[in-house]
Length: 207
Image (cartoon, rainbow, N blue to C red; front, side):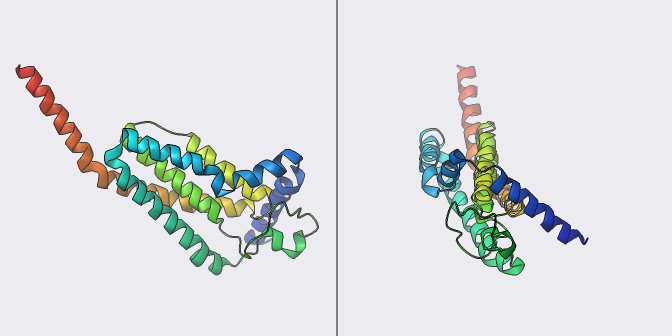
């Protein structure tokens, strides 16, 4: 069996297990809720408040690069990679129709990679490493948040596991790149704070 054919077979088996084998009433309600962008407005509001309250000097750069990261991942995944690969969503695939449960509307025709995975892992990676550079804190829950949304995409039947895996890898690479830009861009502010602290300490020591 050719390698790509084998991968496709494994992908469909994993999809069948998650979408059909794990089916239950609770997930049928929870997973569509989790993948809805409106669900996460409180998270975005919290992050904005946190930035403006504790790290206002970084806020504009952080917000601009967040928007740029999502804009990049969304455009490249939807307008470049998907047309090139041309893979049908599982809910549109003729051979999978007997098991598709239609938990949500199927949406567009193309599946690889998942835009949800690309965008959310792009944000998770950027936020994780940008916040690490600002505060030294590691917000690991960001990765869990992105992974949960990816799982929901497979569960409701609109993406294969490899779709979200590829999207997660692509999004993470974009997010890490944005975090690197942020670190370079924000460095002057960090250095100014360090200089001010040093100068203040010197004045106190002289007194």
